[in-house]
Image (cartoon, rainbow, N blue to C red; front, side, top):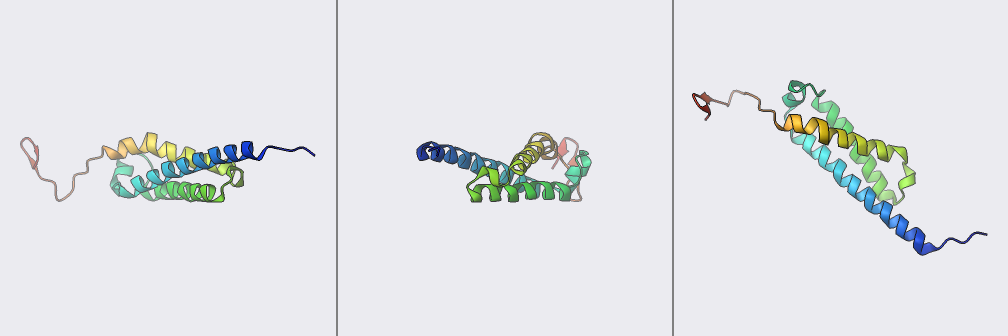
Amino acid sequence: MIYSHPAALSVLDWFFEVLAIAALGFEGFAFVDAVRRPKQAFVAVSKQTKPLWLVITGVATAIGIGTAASGSFSVVGILSVVAFVAAAIYLTDVRPKVKDFRGGGAGSHMGPYGPW
């Protein structure tokens, strides 16, 4: 019988739990940011549609919640990594472009020197 030291396992378990919580925060931030952006921005900058990104970041957040709540990284395994990568793609590729989107709507008035 091989005896493993419980303190070593608990340190590793804590490390993965902290990683899971950090990933959940990252994924949750991506989802909230996608909710806040205007629908027209996604199509205008050629980054798919807002509903698609809401589904992607929402599922990533749900997987992050499951991983953090389970206390074990191996429960969802590769899905945790895929969820984190999906949120990272949104935050590094899509968010910078939709963040800078300035849509002209009925409420925007242009003067000779810009909007007023």
